Length: 132
Image (cartoon, rainbow, N blue to C red; front, side, top):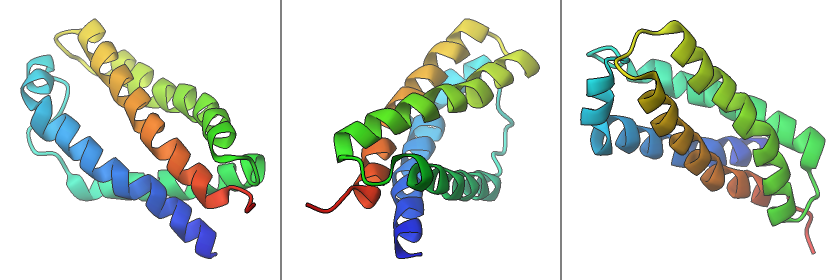
C-alpha cells in the first residue's frame, strides 16, 4: 500500500503544477486562441482526473513493470502510457471539440504529453524499481 501511495504521488505531484502552468499560465494565450477550453476551468475535476489516472497507472506499472531498473521500467511504461494518453487526451479531444486550429492543438498537446510522461515515468519507475 505504501508503494501505491508513493506511485500515485509520483504521478500527481508533478502533473498538477505542470498542467496548471502549461495550460493556464505559460501557454494560456495560445490555448485561448484555439477556443477549445471553457472560460472557467473546473480545477477539482482536473485533480480528480489526475487521482484516477495516478491510481490506475500505479496498478498497471506494478503489474507489468515492477522490479525493472528505473530507466528500463520508465521507457517501457512511457511506451505504453504515452500513446494511450495521447489517444484520449489529444486525438479524441481533437475529434470532438470545435477549435480554431486542430493542428495547433495536436502539436501543443502532443508536446505536453511527451514532457509529462518524460517526467512522471521515471518517478513511478523509481517507486517500483528492484532494490540492489
